[in-house]
Length: 463
Image (cartoon, rainbow, N blue to C red; front, side, top):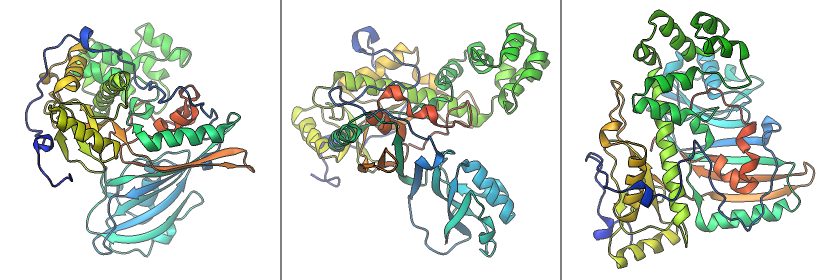
């Protein structure tokens, strides 16, 4: 049966009803405890990992955008596809803005790219002439192609990303191990965990989001302001002593949000809500998103813990999503219906989904619904918890596939560099970190050598 056919198992999933949770006891339902941030399991314990490190040199990591659409060749927006090296997306955007004399907020791009890498991405610039494009080129940036289109590129206008990554200092037999793991992923797909980038440099973005959502303002401010053990000792001592003036002076450069919080606490002593209002709207949304991501990871862990034949097989009552699309459907509670959908999952046509919890997200039925309800209850949350508390912010929620298909994964041994060269593509919203850790081993922490630009979580993808 194809997607155009109708049956009970393909009933459309409405997303305009308020979230309703089942009355369950988390102690009886949940098998895993919530892990802070990101601690995924290895798919197979029988296959060795490669070990190794990435990003010893920034040219070891290459990322190329896969655009959502091809520019039509006409329109008021100039589309510049550029290659940049060892610079952030924001640095590239600002360079283009200065060079072409355009306000930076008018320049569009689909998503943020790594700094310590060679990355290719497209920017849209609302100008009518391309005569000054050649002046953009610099030692770290060059224009690869120029076209035109009718609209600005916005966050999420992205089909995915193509990666080429070099892994150095690998274990003996690394090529065989990597090949076996890639074969495993090619058959069963990759668990669609949110990677560590989503949770911030110190991994506590979700804790901040949870505290803000519950209106536990004191806890949220403490997480944001308390210095880390072993660093910023002078600031740490001043803050611990309650000397706000000294803490403000000793705060490391670039910590604008923390500076605003300290200034508010100095101006309005004891008024924690006034201080919390100084957290920028976009940053607050990122913290909420980090918490949503952590709960999704928890549900995915629960599914993996229970899986006998594959975490990616639908259960009766699940909500599934068609591969490469956003349309979703309920899996039938009848055995004939869910067995048929399991065959679609084995063929890579569909994936069960997990929750990006929000006020209007739809819960599945059956055991999947019990797990998701238990997670909410264990966290002390209710549908009303997902009201934004911030004017203009929507936390309606959505669904995210539990599994993704990795495009054209390949690995080769390069004798001259004494390293593995891995290439693959991922859909928008997926994390290369998750794929790399399945190859290298979680203890090798590929993200440890990544350069995070902020203590805040990264901008959420558009699910």
